[in-house]
Each structure stands twice: as structure tokens, then as C-alpha cells.
Image (cartoon, rainbow, N blue to C red; front, top):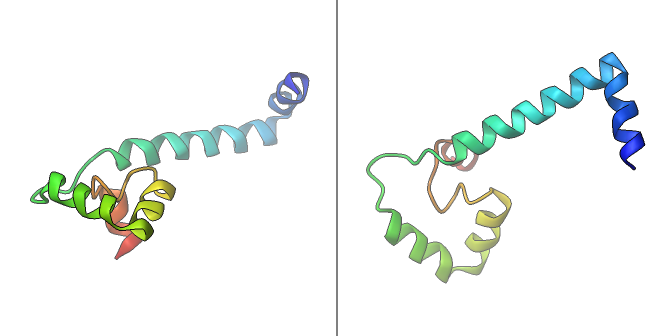
Length: 77
């Protein structure tokens, strides 16, 4: 398994695509931690925890919904 990862990074085109994907994931996680100003975070988290569907959406969004992040604004509106 480790040998396959090392071989994947030896191919220039595949290495570029893997690094781009990793960079996009890191950027998404950073943006998911920036909350929208003016939102009561504790009330929003209580509401999401009380609703099972919203809890699942929050799980798939990387907790972007519970913090009502900048990323959640673009995805859920």
C-alpha cells in the first residue's frame, strides 16, 4: 500500500492532481471554520442537535452547518 502511494507521487501528472486535491481539502477545512457574523452559535447548535436530518447534514459538511460557516452559505443557499 505504501509502495503504491510512493509510486503515485513519482508520476508528475498524478502528483500534481493529488497535491491539488489535498490543497482543496485544506482550503475547504479552513473556510469551514470561519463563522458568519451575526449568527447565535449556541442557538444554532441546539437546533441542529435536536433535528436528526440536520445532524446528518452537519456531519457530511464537516461541521460547517453547525458553525454556519462561509462554506455552508455557498452550499446550502
